[in-house]
Length: 91
Image (cartoon, rainbow, N blue to C red; front, side, top):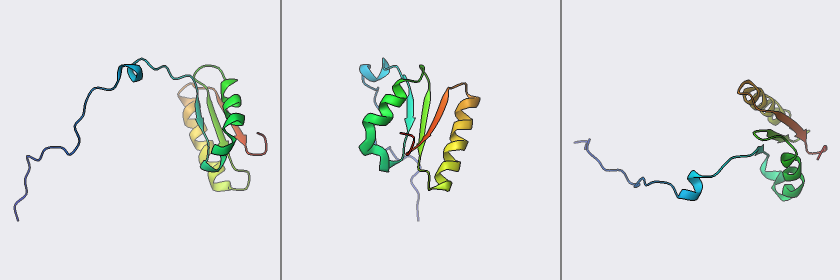
């Protein structure tokens, strides 16, 4: 069987749109899919954070999810972000 090393890519990479290049990121919100219906609540909480802040939401009952969110929060803190972690009850 012969392998072809000189294959072309299936996708054509182009330059991103100008609006995307000029976009400024204010805050980051990481929420579980079950909280997408409550977007107005966690979005207001995220908007109260300073620029570059991170809002992490988790379920109170799911300890595995909470531990993962805590590890993500530690990583963001090491990078210099302001991190606020909330459970579903606190929203």
